[in-house]
Length: 91
Image (tube, rainbow, N blue to C red; front, side, top):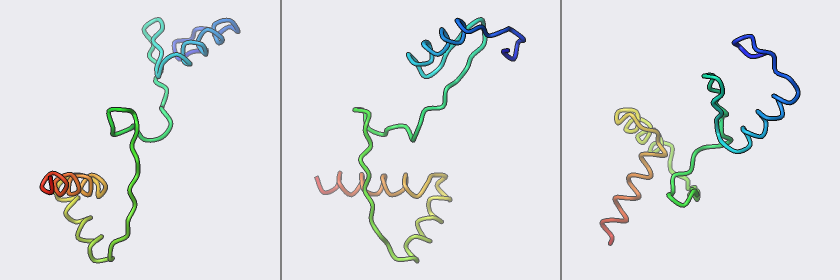
């Protein structure tokens, strides 16, 4: 049964499964069922987000965490911003 008390028949369940397979969410009879996508959303416009990993000294990590917190962003967002600024200056 749905939250609204409607009985979900076998054919209705099959229909719902087909609809869910087509989109990230389904809207039926005023009910909205959101399907949580798997993983993080991509950052690139092409639907990808290649990953860069590097190590830093503990003290640098602590300073980055403090700065990120004061800016209201994650350490990853802070690092992306710093790299983007560095690349744009380098031309």
